[in-house]
Image (cartoon, rainbow, N blue to C red; front, side, top):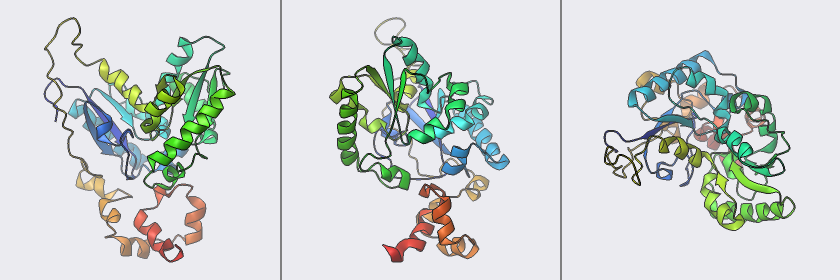
Length: 316
C-alpha cells in the first residue's frame, strides 16, 4: 500500500466479475499508484446501459462515493463506459473529479487539432455508442456525430466477443486482428490523427496501436493518469520531497471486498455464486425460462455464471 500524501484512484465496479487482463481498468497492475475498487450491488451491465437506475442501486452508489471520500482518493472512475449514466449521481456527492468515461478526453482532442483532422473513437459496439449521443453531448460536451469524429465498433474483431460473453479475452488474438483492421481502416481514412479507446477493456492494445500506427492513443488509463498526475510530486523542478514515493504494492482485492454485510446481500453476482455454491437456491427461486434468459440478455453479465452453466452444460 502507498503511504501518506500518495495519490490514489477510486474505481466503481459493475456487479459482475470477470478475468481482467493487465491494461484493463479492473486489473490493479494497470496503474502505478494505489487503486481502490468498490462494487455497486445490483448495478448490472443492463441497468447501466439503460440508464434506469433503481432507488436501491442509487443509494448503493451514493454510499460508495462516501466510502471513496473516506479513503481520500484523488479521483473516481468506473469499469464500464455506460457508467456515464451515473456520472451526475456520483459527482453530486463528492468534490473530487469524476471521469466515468474516457470520452471526457474528447473535447481536448477535438480542440487540439484542425477542423479537417479527425479523431478515431474505438468502442465495443458502434451502434450502442451512437444511441448515447445525447447523453455524451450533455456530460462530455462532445458531439460524436461531428465530422471530426469517426467511430469504429470492435464487435467484429476476432476474439473480442469474449468481452460481450463475460469470458477471459485472448489478448493475442484480439491484438492481432485489431491492429490489422485498424491499419486497413487508416489507409482509407488518412485524415485521422489520433485514437481514443472508449471501451475500458481496450487499453491492453494501446501500445500495439501506438507502435503500428504511429498515432497518439488515449484510453481509460491515460484519462486516469491525467487526473492523478495533477496530484503527484514533479521531481524535475519546484518543491521536491514533499510526497512519499509509492511503494509499488496494491491493496489485495477480491470481488465483493469493501462491502458490508447488507451490501453483500444485494449482490447479484456474489462470490459464493462464482464458486457455484448457491446454484440450488437460485434455480429454485428463478422462474425465468431458459429461452427468456437468452432473449433478454445480450450479455451474460446479468446472469450469474453458475446459473448460465446450469442451463447450458448439457448443450456444450
